[in-house]
Length: 312
Length: 312
Image (cartoon, chains in turn orange, cyan):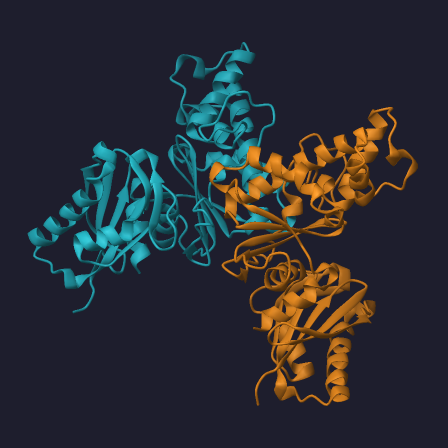
């Protein structure tokens, strides 16, 4: 029987996002289930399998019509689908997500790291369409990076390729990063990071700013930038210095066609490029100066799209 | 007829190095010819072709026994063998090194960038044997980088992958780098760079040091380090700070198995790792902390070995 459909699964610390796609990449249906982290997260994969099997029964679709199940998980996954722990899910030790899911569902399974999978999704159906070498830079609570080279996910030796939030960019940092180091890119360039920059700015500068009466967020800062708030512009410049230099370092290593910027900060829109791109161009090797910058477009669906693409 | 041999050619600005290999990678013969850069370097490829054809005639070996000719050139080469200029050779504009050499020799040709080719050579028969994901870091007049992912050269979108000498590492630099930027890694971590660090050190510090009576070179500095010269140790620490952080940034992007260190500075031996590795470990994402560091072993022959490997 012809293979018509794919399941794309994005496992997060709170919910598991599930998508049902045609093999051409059309999203037909999506839903979420709760991530049950108790007892070392042992129910997570069985819950996903049950949700998939129930869906097939309900829709009267046979397993033979399914090309496969793709799954993105928040941890380092090697090219055989073996994960070495996932703190956010309660998973410890090493085991094969692929083997377990294939046993549970009786369908072919592919697995990879969630940040990489999101990058694949943006390449396939999102902001990175038309590129085969790209870095997805997710500016959220931290900074996630997904590396796509020649159309495929590059996971690295220990599954840590694309850990670009932990590029060292500041020698004078006194606060520790979640990774245990000091002065990592995500301490300045993430949604949390730019808020930190803003708080420090107001500690050091007694100035008027619309930001002083607002809850400071990345969005509020860039809204204030658009309203020509002097303090907000200075904060955006600091953010741009760090992120622009960080992306320039990445370009000197892998020379991608494009950076696709996603996550909470990217909701501010193209205005962020006005602060990142000039710094990037000033610091990058000249042959990489024309690297494209684009916004991610799939939002929270990037993971299910990319997971589905894993199967193809 | 069975293919028994390969030519490996490394085109430099002064000489072209040529090697004659078995397909198993045994170097049977090597020689050099002068690089004739006059008239936009138009004689370089014909000279190489003539040298190869003369060699075959002299040794009474037929073209049918040759698996191919691999060639490394100092400039950006795409995966079709097209080079976009090579300043050091006088080459301007775009042309296919592969097409020209195939026409001139009547044998199959593969071409790539010289730094990438050297990395391939070190993986195949040098310090990087046993690794399939490695970065060759050549610390010479500048810093060259060769990126090998999954056993293959990664050239990048514009042929600039591995331009790791131009990772920005210092905001306060006032002198310009050869690339036109300020504060690039090669301004501190190359053979030239560490000498610059030494000169600056002695401008700022009125101290006794064996280096003050010597011609300062990377080797002299690390010889003095071994003799516990205080100034030399301080200079080596500065060098290690820059290089260790730079390599940590690279690891956060591609997560290689190994860094293979070559070029003039590497002649100082494993002592350089004592200054680079602790800084690397302190700044790198934790999962990459055990990345291997090894010395390149092929020296000036890395290019011909890697060029030969291109053919296989």
